Image (tube, rainbow, N blue to C red; front, side, top):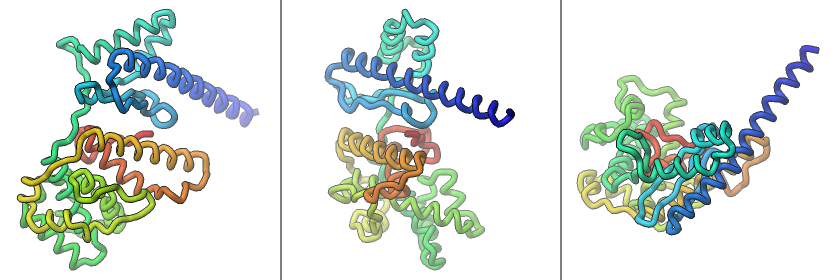
Length: 292
């Protein structure tokens, strides 16, 4: 009897989640249509956190006709529409207008693309991190010395600071995890013009053979001064592609299916993390949301 009640409770919770998800999906379609009506020149319109992840963070992202990037959080207007179904269309319109033309005392969030200087500095930070994560202790110490010599510590996040400059050698698990940041370097290198295309998402790249990385190691200050970025729309398209690849990885794992051979989960996550950071997600490098 107890097992039956637990199953019924679980089944009811699943139905509630599915009902909420379906409602949010339908609501997001109406909101997407409102964006298209409000800005016919809008491009790269996409919806986030609908199928998986935290539904309360569901939002629509787009680039307007003037090149500005926007994100519209949907949970609050969706909740209002659930309570007042007859006011749904008005709620959608008011929410969108408050985002586009916010009152002086409101808080809203427009994505801000990272600058060329920020991307170059982040690449230097990751060079230091990955170099310090080398399994060869002598090479790792060379990376730490390089970071100290060129004041790379000013570009490191708090977590990276502790990893690179902690007097005690990090745990093996940290060394492995931070070593994977080599794949996060690839989108930054590409965005700075160091490689013509992003490699396939199942192929690990040899970062140390890339001329741009060699130049950055030789003269970090000159590297930052010369940094130039690809157009924002190109980076946005790649971020959207990696987002889709990440969704496929998560979908396979949740449904206990093998991930397609064309995708390596670790590579996809690291590259998506870097691209999402570049288009403006996260208050810092250590806090980039990569929900699907």
